[in-house]
Picture 1 (cartoon, helix red, strand yellow):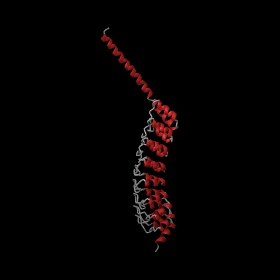
Picture 2: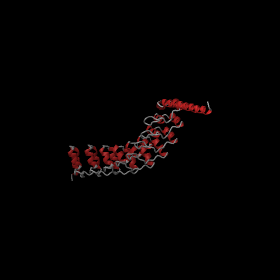
Picture 3: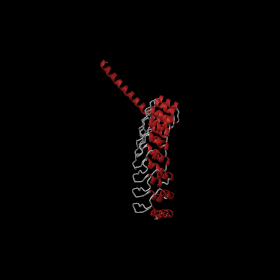
Length: 328
């Protein structure tokens, strides 16, 4: 046999061997693929229960530290939700992405803000967490901390550069979210940090309008003390006083009147605070309004007075009181 023939046979043999090896490797990879999600799940479960030894062992086996479930949640996020600082620190040390996002755009830091864990928040920020990242609905960590009244965390985030003027998809700022939930301590902090008092959401609401509607008189006071417009109007022309009356909040109503709220301003339909008290059956506030010179002669867009509305609703007591004020 010639050298040329031997060389040709050798090349064919090597080629066949490479094909066999490639097929074996492909089979092994295909067989291993279904296992990876299970191992990723094991990693997240270990993080959830705080089993740091299991987390370390799984990572040592080569499980990707950022293996996520179908919602995009990683082991780091799970550990944050479980308030497990030790596991959080381990995962970060092993290279977990501190700014990973779920399909809803939540990050480890937004989870930490929602759960109110100050220590974990500090660690995440130290490792480069972006304080400006938003969830799908537009909340950043400061907005979340403000909504839940976590003042220490809000202070920490502000120190790290969080923007108190930022707004979510509805146009609501951290101050508005704190105001509507009655978080007066956070309201004070945000005001001191430069939050805009007269910012408006998509409905034309300011922080004061939201606080008055919710009846949080302590927040109403804090905002008024800071200079909020006591006669601000929402997108339909309602004032803080009209909103407080509509929900039957006597403390907020009295505070607004004492601080200069005009009881005779009317919304787009011509409804005054006095008319609002009548149609929402808050008769106990009628006398308060009359004491602060609410005008019972005002008419709405249908030409009706507060007395007319009281008669229409069969509220004889209110009708008599209003008629008495109209008498010369």
